[in-house]
Length: 442
Image 1 (tube, rainbow, N blue to C red):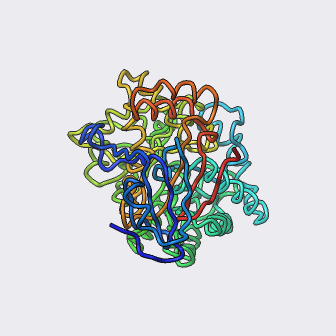
Image 2: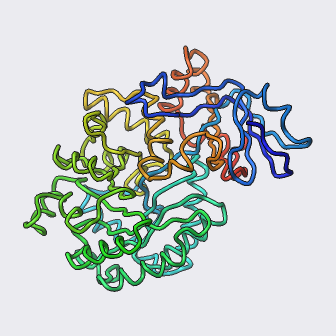
Image 3: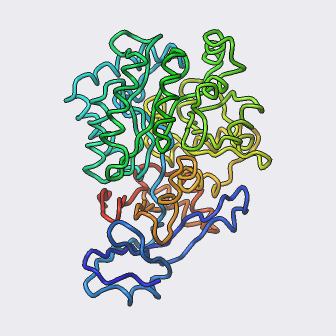
């Protein structure tokens, strides 16, 4: 398909790399598309053509800009399925395991977001970090304060980023300054939905932090709001830590398990994304599959807090595959880079005795993540009609990476080198809706 002739046509030239299918189903060879010296053309923020550069260059309108990245891979922008912008400044803070870490580190840090100026400053840094690491879509936790949501969406809007975000709900088991009520959480979120959901590239997520910090009344209110706004997202945590799982059972003794708490209140289903899920049982994973509920695998966070080793192979069992994306989970997560996150996911998989194929890892960070977030109709792959969000990866970004990539035997080998040795330095450029949003100095 040739691009239409318009002055806002832009083109990116490089080796195109993207997934078209789930490699766990189609096989890595059929799922990965590689176009050496390719061209992807966009107009009005949407992809209008892609293929070999030799075929498409002559179809461009005269004077159309072509950004050429020889030796680099042009891929779909990364999709972060779970991250906390209100924890940006506490990344890398020493702490114990989950529950103690929340009380000693997270809750004090999030109280600072009561001040709009602070929220604005952190939101700008957060958005810059996403772009610097090649992330163009993300599902984000804000703080309990509605202004923290406004600050994030305004910062994202300035860069035209595709973000799903929401105010955190908590009405118990947290410091008083962070608590709301069932009614206030409902009212605040309803107003934020009206203000932001579907405006530009902003989408809204109803966001109870996790079952222990929401009363049954608040979870009921979250379910009611979701029924009123079925096109919104639901974002929370599940089964991250053994002590947390036991605590949920104490708080909700009438429920069959942690997942059943959310199920009871109508919080599962398509566009529901639960972070972690390390200790979900077979029956719970089956229920995720049945309802279309997605999980976000957060390996750097799970390792940092000693939470456990998530089993990708079990979650993706072909008999009842669960939709799965990758989350950096900053600030327990230790990097905004989905390359670094993938590297840790590969190590966790090795410890589980089921190595993670690099194409499957790449899929989870792009098309798989988009499917987990129900965004695969617009992002996650390179396809005509999809939004023009790209990351340009440089296999020679560092001397060691260049040395390793030079002896690569295949494009999959190059991809694995980027996964194991790459970080933000490997992101040569990030394009958002057909516009250059970040470029690494070379």
